[in-house]
Structure formats: structure tokens, C-alpha cells
Image (cartoon, rainbow, N blue to C red):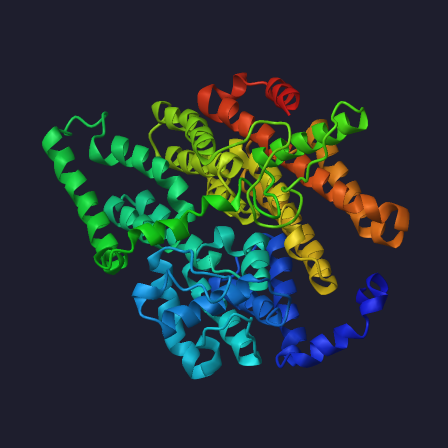
Length: 538
């Protein structure tokens, strides 16, 4: 199908295959993958080793696939942590890709750099220009594959196409980090509360994106661990001792990770790197959230009023430039980091109220999903990849409770689709369409299989079907637009419109979650009321 779909790239494909040293095993690897898929369709129970082998095979086949600038980002972090003393890590700016992750991840990069030097010494040399070599590609790709061992033990997310897009092709270490998050969930589920809390603190020192989950952990531990109100044996003395345990965990982990930087007096510089508010309200590629809708409304109003001659001035719009910079709205009020923060906190309140409706592990998952979703919708400078923090805990919730199956399926589809622009080359285009289709079918069948006796199966309404069909139509338009000169000028605008539509649907799902599953009983909630309200607001 490749030569038919992309005839202009026919000569590239044999080169790609020839370049890969493991291509001669490709047929065997693909056979394993399709065998696993066949067994899954028959609802057999393949061994865990089969999943791991298939996953390793697929990721190994993508070693030479496209990688983003994040590849050079992590290569530069290897060089910075290896070549300089820790006191200079957060001051180094030879490359534009400065270190902006917490110290825990910096120490992780330092650990990897000890091996990187043995593979290719030039890999750990600081340079303003990007450096790459075959050894560098092999090393960095395999570090992602190897560190994935943390999360491959969780069958519920081992087949996540999103992690495959972001880690194994685009290049990041999200599988490793989300594996730690899932281990924290597991410990809390098994009632190892202190260990689960410690794993979350470690994760927080690895990537500060997970700071948005702190209110969920704080509320849950306060009600369930420190002073459980429904426990007759609870007392202030027990609460004090448990608080000391958690405080000791935070102090111990922070001393190891942050201690050297605090001692060196670098906290101000460290905070400025971790929270660069000057980067703007939205990322260069908008995440499909509320602020994407806000930008789009400002964009439409400006051009509409100019067309009607209500505006006499001509102003450059910064948020559609595709660059990371401060966002300045033309007509709508400017959004500050404080406003964004308050919007996140206010949106988290309904989820915290859900603690009053039930006190079990599902309640904790609700809190996690709610806080993650609130930060994704209203957070400052949110990346499109942040949708992973919502979908992964929502997956567990959907498996445990059939009421969430439909929301999970829809959110999973739109969450996958929002990552499509990350993979734009011909080879990866075929790959993303195939994996997206297979994963969507697999997710749908899984929800039906798990909740076969439930009445909450993920069947879509007419409203939801129209959304899916509309996105399919727009995607087809974007695919054929470059062929027609008259349409090519509209393709970028349509792409912008498309992801704003996806963002508006995220808002609708958010209202559903608040109303249907948290504040009132699901049997008494009408979807149409929330949908109509969200459409009017949008």
C-alpha cells in the first residue's frame, strides 16, 4: 500500500528498510504481533512475555523513524549533566534546549550519561548545534525501550498507541514516568499508603507536570489516611503521627533531589527554569483545551470585524505563528498565569466534593482524573501530550466501573487524534493511521468484553457520531488539500479549526463528568442539558 498511497516516496522506503539492521527479522516480529492480535480478538489470555516481546519488536522496528527536537533536547541534557558540575546545570544555555526538568530527572540524565560516554564520547559534548550519529540514535532509542520496563507490567496500558507515538517515535520518556505513577496507584490500592505517597513525591521530582495531581493526593490522604472521619479509632494523636510520616517522606526525598541545589543557593534559578511563564498561554501547537477555544474566538472576532470595517487597525496575531512566545490577544481580555491558575483550582473543586459521595479507590481515581483534566483544560502553556495524564488513570477507572466506559472511549479517540500532528512524515502517517484504527477497535471491543453485563456500553449518540464523522471529513480534506492550489491556502486554517472543535468537545466531556458522575446520580443526569450548555458557551 505504501507505493500506492505515497508514490513520490517509493524510493525512500527501500532505503529505510535497508538501513535497519533488524529488518530481516521484521516478518517474524510482525507475525508475533498479528498472532497476539488474533488471540486477543478470540479473548484468550496471552502470557505477559508475549506482550513484552511484541511491544519490544514494534518499538525496535521504529528506531530509525522520525524523531522531534526532543531528541536533541535530551541529548543536550546528557551533555550538560555529564560535562558540568551540578551547580551549573540550570545556568547552562549554550544550546537553546536548556534543562527545564526538576533535579530528579537531571540526576536520571546524569546516570544515563555515564553509559552514553562509552557509546559515543561526542554525544556528551555541549554544543549549540544539534549532534546526531547512528550510535546516538541507537543509545537514546534503547534507553526509552529499556526504561519502559516500569510500565510494561501493567497490561491495561501496555498497548497504548499514545505512548507509542510520543515515546518511541516523537521521543520522550513518558512510559517510564507513568509507570511510576501507576506503581503509586497500585500501592494505594493495596493500602501501602506511605509507599504510594513516596512514589508520587519521586515522580514529582522527575517531572513537575504531575504537580497538578497534588490536590487529589492531598485531599485523598487527608480524608482516608491522616484523619479518616468514618474510622472510630482515629484520633488527633494518630493523625499527627501519620502526618509526620508523610512529612519525613517529603523531606527525605527532597533532600536527596533538591538538597545540593538548595545548599548552592540555586532555587531561584531552578524555579525560573521550571516555570517559564514568558512562554505564553498556549504552546506553539495548541493543545485542544479551553484556551485554544479562547484564541480561536479572538482570531474569528478580529477577522470578522475587519471584514465588516468595524476595525481600522491592523495587528499581528502572535498565537498562530507556530512559535513559542508570549500570547497577546487582539480583542479579548489578556489571560495572566494567575487567572489560569484560579481557573484550574476552581475547576478542581467539584472533584474534591466527590469525596463526600464515596470513599474507595474509585474515588481516588476520580480525583486524579478530575485534577488532571482541569489542568489540561485551563493550565498555563499546556502541551498536547499532557492529555496522557488524563487518559491513563481514566483507563483504569473505565475498566473498574462501566459508567465510565463511554467517556473513556470517546476521550481516548479524541486524545489519540489530538497527537496526529506530531507525526507528519509519510512513513509515520501510515503507521499512525493503522495504529489509531487498530487501537480504537481494540478499545471498543475491550469495553464491551469487560462490561458485557453492563448497560453502560460505549455506544455513541448521534451528536457524538457527528463529531467523529466531522473530524474524519476534515482529516480527509487536509490529506488532499495540498494537491489543489486553491484549497492549500485553507488547509492550515481548517487544521486550526479542527483542533479547536476537538477542544470544544473536551469541554463538553468535562461538563458531563462534573454533572453525571460526581455531583448527581448518573441515572438522573441528562446528557443533552450539559451538551447544549457547553455548545452555547463555546
